[in-house]
Length: 265
Length: 168
Image (cartoon, rainbow over all chains, first blue to last red; front, top):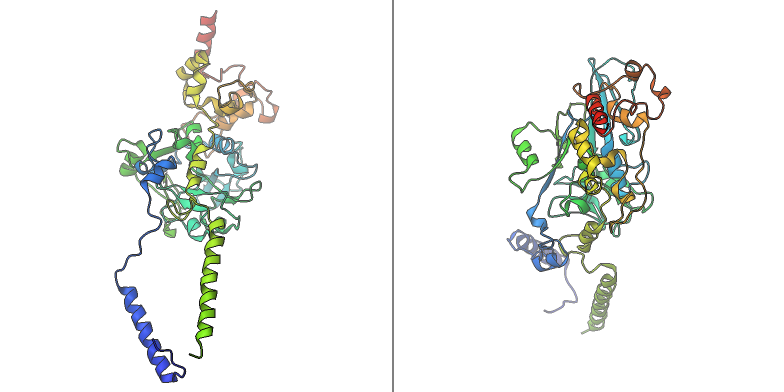
């Protein structure tokens, strides 16, 4: 190509327009850039995620079910989570909230120390006609805002559908803590990285239940695998009336609730 | 050509910059990054490798068979041993060796975590007002106040009586 020493303004604009239109057309064409991140089966086996000890992450898709009508607010789940995951004092990966609501619509909500020591009698200052407990935790959303905002690729979703944090990658910027509409994340004061519920990934990959589910004495917390057709949670989700938290945020949470009230967000 | 020198210079800068970028990137990006997605692939194995702390009542029953049998027959069968005692890892380590004795909490506050009468609990769940049940307010209760009548492993009063009779 001949490089011109003198280009008139007219010529320059004409060529620029040509180039812009060419780029636009190329952009519309159905050209697919090969996905560099496509899962490689061989490397998955190497990483211990497939076919090792019978655990294959492609064979699972987990969901969590909380029946608030069964929750007695003992806080054993919070205690078990704290011990299992070595959660620092005053921080919670799961917590239990107490709601007391009057006929006139007054609402009292509390969660003393996340409910880790249970609940004592309280005086909301009005005559509560409706009262219940709501256990909360990371919803492991399908369209999660916390992964979107992570600038270093420390937050990610696994094939089984859980949202995890790589504490080695995490720089502790706290964007994800702000992005989570459920308040499920915190900055761990010891590691200074983002911390959250993992649905006890180290337990479920060994065929155990998450610590909170195991600790629940009333069966208010249930953990299930949607890819298993005999799974209890899958059957309940298919047959019961189920609620989710903050459906308007379109995050598609995978913690499902039975017996939610309009005051619970 | 009057500008040739400039083009070469620009070309060298670009190529040099690219090589520098690839070189620096090589050290900054972990090798397993991008293996499965926009994250470090080896982190999955690291997360899995974390040790399990709670064993569940099945692991307790391997040694404490008698207690487990008694516990399984009563209404507290649904309650995990570790809820009232402590996590298994405090008692037995990963290699199955004894570490220390499990704590035994006799305080009424432990029982009241579940059985203190609260309006937010499901109505069918057994709950007590200590004033009505024992004639004392909660702070006045001594350690073991509940255990004087109830066996925490099998709390029904009748069952406890039977058990004592059987034991002679």
